[in-house]
Image 1 (cartoon, each protein chain N blue to C red):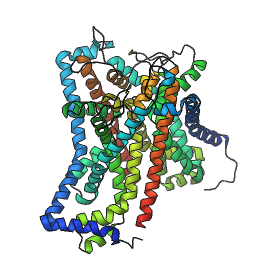
Image 2 (cartoon, chains in turn red, cyan; image 1 turned 45 degrees about the vertical axis):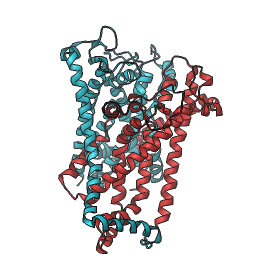
Image 3 (cartoon, helix red, strand yellow; image 1 turned 135 degrees about the vertical axis):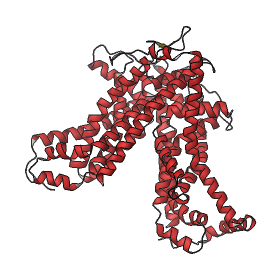
Length: 284
Length: 316
């Protein structure tokens, strides 16, 4: 539709409103990021990156939280990736339209909208207490894995569905069993999509503060976690603990911590893109 | 495209697997794998069962010590003090207030953005704006909390007289900005799904474009838009970081957005960072609050899904 006449004022008003509605939140984001950079950049020194929390703001460091978050990324991925892909394969390939798959499907849709704080309570009740993991890295990773699982399942299903049906049929026609067709034909092709989806899901999860606080992430750790059973601290909980105290001095630490957290997320996203391109090239 | 299927990289592993077939038989092997896959799929159902079980367990333990009437009728919420009060109403009021503020910000902004993007924006801009808004949705909430406390509250204190350092207004606005991309993106999909014939019919009958949008397009897309709104509201109810950071932690039933309040989620955070001992009623309160949160978000989610289904049916 093309209009040659001038737009009436009411239409122009609506367009201005629309542009403002998009610009306002993005502007607020930019303003906030600038604020974080201004406050935190001076604090972002080598000493901050390799130091331990301290009672005085200018000596405090972020190392235990950073290491804890890296552990969480690894463990969460190790748990969520196989389980999520397994569930997706089951839903896409094994159960055609059974009652189970419909139940699971409705469940996944609902779980993806359950607030993180509920997952925190689940982790506290099941992993920390019932299974006896205690307030450990593995309890945190299990909780985060459950949190990202719906997203991993949904993105893995999309990736599996994007594989042309003709390939599956060709594999089966050549005498492959169902699992052989999945493992050798469908999965390799869907892998780029699956990996990207999982990385994006995990990069969101490492920003989740509430579940980690509930399963007992420390806000003052003076040691590095060395096994899945050890106590831990994580970037978002560390940031939260620097925002809460009344002393303004710690806010600079919080800002610097936010820069580190956002950079970690950015790195994960970049890694996802690189991996996807690599895998694509391998199979094309 | 995939001409290199049987490339050498796969062969060694394939041979190992076929050796395994020799040991336990292809059919058994297939069955085992399907069992494992089914286990993975049922883990999601188990998660739901686990959530309900944990919340129920805590809630029952709580009601062994505190009668329901004290939960509903008390007007004060102070479960951690020496003389505990369990009037959950003031927390619900706090959640309602911040959620309403967030919706007031997010709904008009999100709708305007969606209308602009689907009806007026050049395609290139549309392609750029959607990912940018998604970035906004991916920022950790603790960062939004920092924005609210450090950037937005001081700014608002210049404008709004009598605004306390901790207040409901600033986190409400920031939360609105946080959920706005969700409303914009989902509403845009809904508006986009309205058949072109309807638009063209309205325009052919002489309606202005504005008239066409407000009398034809938006009403046709209303199920989808309502579904988006409910999903965003559910997200605002469950939001856990902005409010405890920027709204103070003082539970009170008030409609005044200028004073400190506490929400359901903020209370759970408060307990998890305090030293409430396992097994005390104060500790069990977080499960009661969690159960209420779960029911509230479940309700909005289910309503949102059924509206979305209706929207899909209408589009067909």
